[in-house]
Length: 160
Image (cartoon, rainbow, N blue to C red; front, side, top):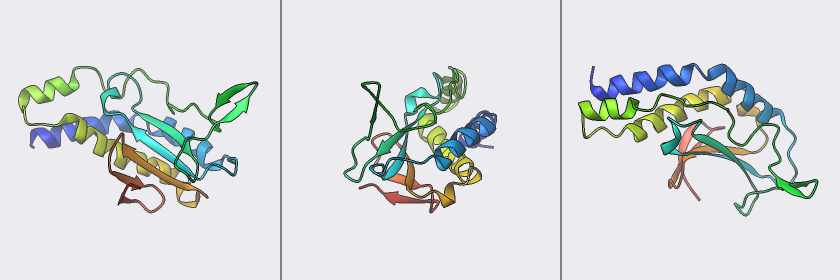
């Protein structure tokens, strides 16, 4: 098995432990009634956060591709039944895992591998949460990427 395959398997083991919690959070998002201004749920993967929390954040976008907020007691909040960070965890995998594998192969890009593995897993959780019947658009992408994964169609598409 290659170092890349080994690292991919390791990431899969770590994300699989979070499946029930993520699916539960996504189910709440799928079932929620959003204000009419919300046109899309956009999930962003922040690749530097695998070892310091959950690297995916939810954004609630309008038709103009701007974040939509609602006012609650004079304070702007997301129109969401769950926290924007989805899961409150210390890490997906422990600090040092990336270094362990890049020490074995300096050409290894652990963030790219982890992000792709996470998006594949996230998509499965989305579908398990009933996401195919979600009324709005929904996608997940690495932060600042020009491609996104359409969660309803289960395919990569060019971004905007």
